[in-house]
Image 1 (tube, helix red, strand yellow):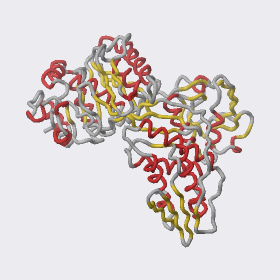
Image 2 (tube, rainbow, N blue to C red; image 1 turned 120 degrees about the vertical axis):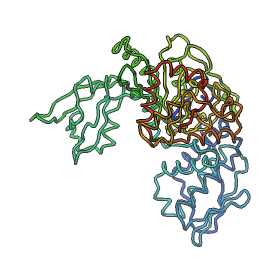
Image 3 (cartoon, rainbow, N blue to C red; image 1 turned 180 degrees about the vertical axis):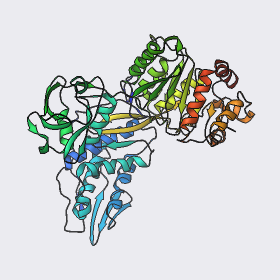
Image 4 (spheres, rainbow, N blue to C red; image 1 turned 45 degrees about the vertical axis):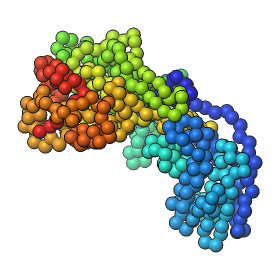
Length: 525
C-alpha cells in the first residue's frame, strides 16, 4: 500500500513494493576518539544511504509516531549483544562505544535529518567494527539487517528488514519468478530434483523428482554450489536452459532443452471426498484466488450434483497478499464489506468490499482455522463468519490483525513496516482478538465421543456475556471469549469430522447459522 491504492501483503502483511532512485549526499561527521583506532570508511556511503532511507520510511509509514534518534539508538544498542566485551552507552545525544581501554564517541547530527541520522548510524557501526573483531567478522548485509531489525523491535513484532538475498526469495514466493519450476536438494554429492511444479517448463519437458542434474548449459554442476545453481536456473522469461539429467534405468544422461517462464507457486489444493470439496490454502500469493477459482470449477465438473458442500481449510495459513484475501472472499459472497484498515498515515484509511463480476459460490461452506491462521486468512474467516456465509470450525486464530507495507530498499532488500490495523465487517479489531470459531474443537480429547457430544449440543444456548455482538466486547470480554476456545494446532480429525457432519446434515448446518448468527461461540463439552 504505502502511498498507493494498489495493495499487496507479505505473509499476513499487505504490501506495495517501492523502488528508489534518490541520490544520497551527506557530510561525514567528525569523531571524537579517546583511542588510536579509527573506524574504517569502507561501505560508509552505502550504509549511510540504507539507514537514511529506512529511517525515512519508518517515520512516514509506521502506525506509531516515533523519533529518528530513538530508531538510531535502539538499533545501535544491538551491537552490545554481538560482543560481550563491547559496551554501548547513550549519554544524552551522544553515543559511546567502549571495549577494553578504547572509547569512541559519536555526537548526534547537528542537522537532525534522515540523512544525518543515517550517517550517524553508519559511523557508529564502522566504529564498532574497528573496536571489535567479532563484529568486524559479521557480513555487512547481515549486520545491517540486525541493526534495522533492532530499531523496529521496540515498535511492534511484525515490522522488519530483510537483506537482499532473502528479500528476493520472498518476492519470488509472493509475486512469482522466471525459471523452470523445480526445487533442488543434495543426494550425497549429486544435485537432485526434489519436486517439479505442475504446469511449468520442467513439468512439460518431462523432468521428474529424483532426476539428478549432471550439467547446466554444458557446464558440470559439480562446479556450482547449490545456491548458485538455483540462481542460474532463474533468468529472463523465454530464455533457454540446457540440462543433462541422469535418471534411474538409463545408462546415458537425458538431454533436456527448456525455455524459462513466469512461475507463481500454487497455494491451493483440492481433495474430493464424499460429495465435499476440501480446499486447502497454504498462504496467499498472486495466484491464490485464481487457483482457488479453478479448483472450485474442477470440483463441480468432477462431482456434479453429488457436490453438496465446501470446506475452506485455513489452518496454519500465515497469510499473505491482502488483495488476494478480498478476492477469495469474493468467490463466496456477491456483496458487502470484506475489511477496513485504519492507521496514522492518511492513505492507510481504506475500506475493501467484495469484488464484483464473479459468480459467487452458494453451496454450504465450512471454514477451518487454528492458532496458526493469521492475517489474510483471518480476514477471510472473519468476513465469511460475520456475514453468516460460513460456519467457522476449529480453535481461535493467531490474532495478527495489522497491515504492513513492504518497501524495496535501494540495495534490493525489503523493509516491512506496520502501518494499519484491521477492522472486520462485524466492526471489531482483529489484532490480538483474532477470529473465535463458531464451533470450537479445542480441548476435545475423547475421540469420536467428544465430537458427538459437541454436535449433540447444537444449537446450544450461549452465555449472555458471550452472546453479545463482538464489536461491543472490551478487551476483558475478548479475553473471556478466547479463553473458552484457546488457540491450538491439534484436532485435525475433530475438525474434519465436525465439518463433514455439518455439510452432510443440511438442517444442522442451517440451524447453526441461524441460531448462532455465524459469530457466536458454541463451546465444546
